[in-house]
Image (tube, rainbow, N blue to C red; front, side, top):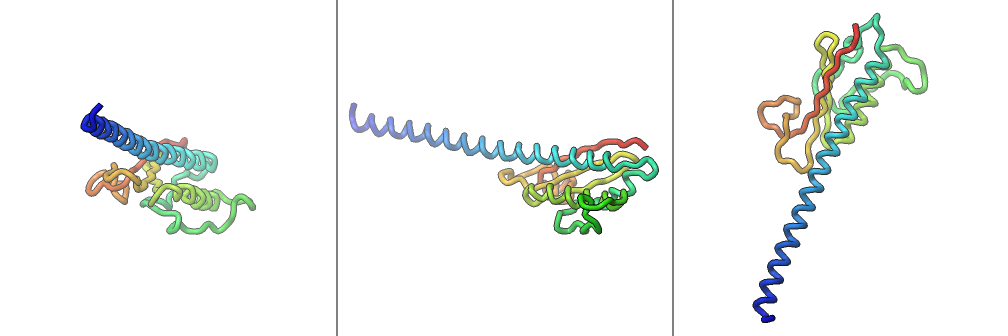
Length: 162
């Protein structure tokens, strides 16, 4: 084996290893994005269950879980008047507590915010976050699907009994 053959073999092996490392990095990025999507799905379902647990046919869920019409972060959410884990709460107090606790969980996603909008008895929960590895997302900072799409959004809708 000549020195030239050895150098060519070294270049070929180096390129192969470089390709494997790039593939590994891309796999890690995809895995991270999939984790965020799974977390957003879990968090949206969690809020649906909180609303369902606090639902009272005499008062619509929309009337007490209506404070998040726009994308809200944990830091900008109002602080509830009571800790409903320690004391009994009214439906409205429980809703405020649920929202603050839920937004604390949503805040684990990078640059996250969430909203709950209502159309009659149908709630639509939107969670948006900044994807760490994606240059483009599927929504903007307000959760709209037009304009500069630099965020990732997850939306879940459900209808509650009236």
